[in-house]
Length: 226
Length: 226
DNA sequence: CACATTGCGAGAGCAGTGCTCTTGTTTTAC
DNA sequence: GTAAAACAAGAGCACTGCTCTCGCAATGTG
Image (spheres, each protein chain N blue to C red):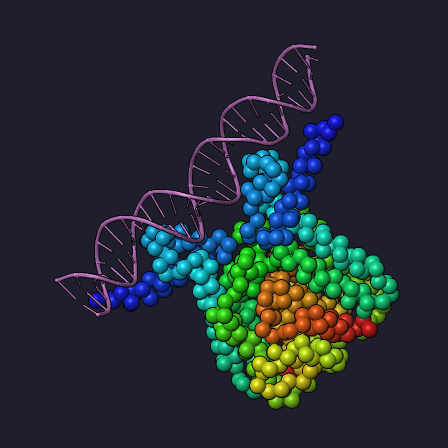
C-alpha cells in the first residue's frame, strides 16, 4: 500500500497545508502549532516528527509564500508581450500588489517585520530572489532596448561600490542611472504596498488601486519604458 | 508624602519605561507583560491596574515610538535653514533613516506588520501624523517657492479623487504633479527603510547609508528642491 | 521467517504566557 | 471615624512551544 516514506511526505504536506490555511486566517504571530495539530487530527507532539520547531514550519511557509508570489510575478510577466517593456513592468507591479492584497498575512510574514530572533535560512534565498530576479531581468531588457531613464545625479565611487552585488546579479551591465532608477522603483513599489497593507494610507488615500496604478505608470515613465 | 495619584502616574511611567526597554531588547512579539512585571518588581496582575491589557501597553509604546520619531524628524527640520528646501528634505529623510536604524524594534512595531487583530486606536493618529505632517509642510513650502518637479503623467479624475484627503491636509493647494511626486517620495523612503531593516537588501546592497543618501538626493532632485 | 531496529502517535509533563478573580491591606473621601 | 475606593499579592484558568517516555507498527537484516 502506502509505504512509510509516502506517508511521511503526505503527512508533511497536510501539516504545512493546514498551517498555510491557519496563516491566512489568523496571521503569522497567532499561528499555533497545537491548533494546527488539532486541525490535522493529531496530537501536538506528533507534529514535531515532521517540523523540528515552530520556526521550521514558519520557514516552510515563508518559502511557500515567496514561491507563490514568484509564480504570480513570473506568470504575469510571461503573459505579456516580451517587447512591451512598459506593459511587462505594469503587469509585474500589479501582480505584486494583487497578491499582497489577496494574501495580506503571507505578505506580512515575508515583507513585514521578521519574527523575533528569526534569521531566514539559506533555503529561502532562491525563492526570495524570484521577484527581484524578474525586476532585474526587465531592467536588463530595458538596457538592451536602449530605454532612456529620467536623469539622475552621478553616483560617487562609494555609491557605485555599494551596489556591486546587485549589479553583478544582472546579466547585462546596467548604467548607473538605470540601476539607481530601478532600485528606487523597487523601493517605491514595496513601500506603497507595505504602507497600504499596514494601514498607513488609511487617512490619506481613498482608492488604493487608483493611486497604485498612477504610481506604477509614473515609475514606468521614469524608467523610460514607454 | 506622595499622594496616591502621584504614585499612580509614577508607576504607570515606570511600567511603560520598562516595557520600552524590553521592547528595544526583544522586539514587539516577544514582549512579555510578566517579564516586565518581574523587572519592575511587582506581581503580574498588578500591571493590569495600569494597563488593561497587553495591547493597551503596546498602544502606549506605539504612541511613544511615533512621538520619538516625530521629535527626531521635527528637530532635524527645525535645525535646517527654512529656505533650504533640499537641505530640509535630506535632514528629514535621514532623521527617519537614523531613527529606524537606532530603534529597529520600535520601527518594526510601528511600520512593520501590525500585531494580529490589532487596530490602532484613534489615540495614535495625532502622533502618527507628525512625520507625514512634516513631509506635507515641506511639500507646501516647495509649492509656494515654485519648485519645478519632474514631469509626471496627468492624473485621471479617479486618481485625483483618490488623493482628496491628503490634499485637504495641506494648507497650500498642491498641484497634481507635486502631490504625486511627494507621495512617491514618501513610498520610496519608507520602502527603502523597510526593505533594509527587514533584511531584503542583504544580498544586493553593501553600504546602506551610501545607497540611502543617493536615493534621497535623487528624490530631492525629482522634487525640484535643488 | 524471526528478530532487532527504526519510525511513529499518544500522553504526560515542564516552563512560560495573557488574563481573571478573590483576599487582605492601605489610602482616600465624606 | 467610618465607608468607599484603590491597590498588591496570590491562586488559578486556558493556552502556548517543546521534551520525554511509552507502547505499537512498519521496516530492514540475519
